[in-house]
Image (cartoon, rainbow, N blue to C red; front, side, top):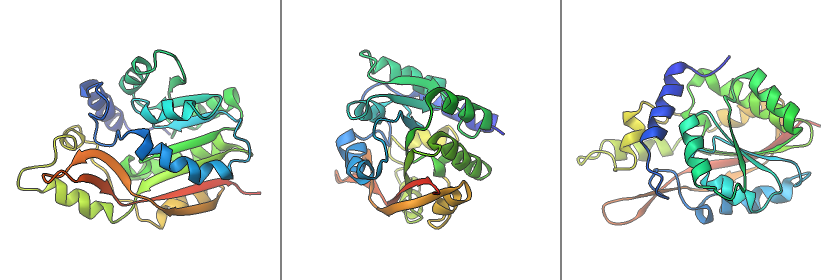
Length: 241
């Protein structure tokens, strides 16, 4: 299967409209607050740091470029061609490579795995954005990319984030400026039960090696200047032995 055309159109229109200015997108926080805080959690658990590293759902490549400074071969993969255009423009030194990928498409992930071999995978805030019917195929796609030796680091909004987002969306002044486009393009976050996330991975044949909680930092602020942070959970998983 592959993602719905509605979902694909939503992301294309979002990224076509998005500014290339760093931090202009709601979740595009600087790596020191995102991938930089995740690295110490998953790097010690990598069986082989030399494996290709796939930033799945890379968007405009902010975290991809950071990862490329720590691993020898990094591939930024995203459903949206427009997102990848942003990523390539922001990476004139070609520290990473970028490719379009629908990770729910079995043949597409198998093709990438055949090209790269087993890979380590980094995915932040993608599962909750997917349509519910796409979440199991996405987990299967991750398992395909990981293969026998890779690891996946996955960070997802916790259930509690829904309350925060609902409050922001229903503010008397309307949603914050950087959050409004997410709703306008029809890609509003969906709820994923905390217990469901590891189950998607287990159903795909992956074993949870470590997990914990860490806020998902955004680039937006409340009216009093406080940076908005959303409750999130992280997991490191690998193929069952």
